[in-house]
Image 1 (cartoon, rainbow, N blue to C red):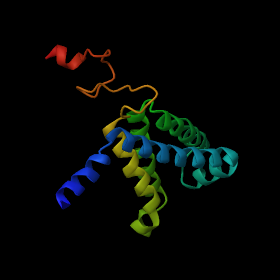
Image 2 (image 1 turned 30 degrees about the horizontal axis):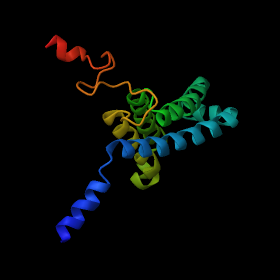
Image 3 (image 1 turned 90 degrees about the vertical axis):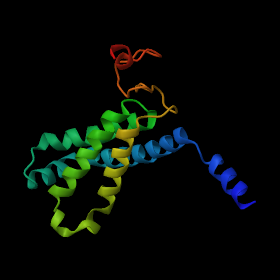
Image 4 (image 1 turned 30 degrees about the vertical axis):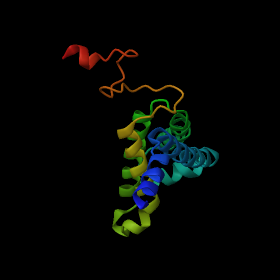
Length: 153
């Protein structure tokens, strides 16, 4: 009886595409909100970046990356690309703002890095506006049901 109940619950929650969509949605919204606030105070953000030894244009790049990339995550477009870029951004942010302060000072950045890496590794899932990944090889160059890697082998 317990096994039947446990299996029923497990099967109900076996929705990988839905899980990826909700992960993409929440992560994308967070990046859009943070990128928008950066754009709203871009002069202050650029000044802060310059104290870290970065150029002012990096502030613009990061702000636009977060807004555009966050929207792309929500829509499920180029998720692996933006997931990888966000992972790199968060790891760099941790190191630039002082890893010596300990891991607890960077919990939010670590969580965003982990979520972004998961998205980069898993891809968009079927709940996306434009699923760019091939199910067989994960590449972008495949055409519909035709996998380039499988045909080459």
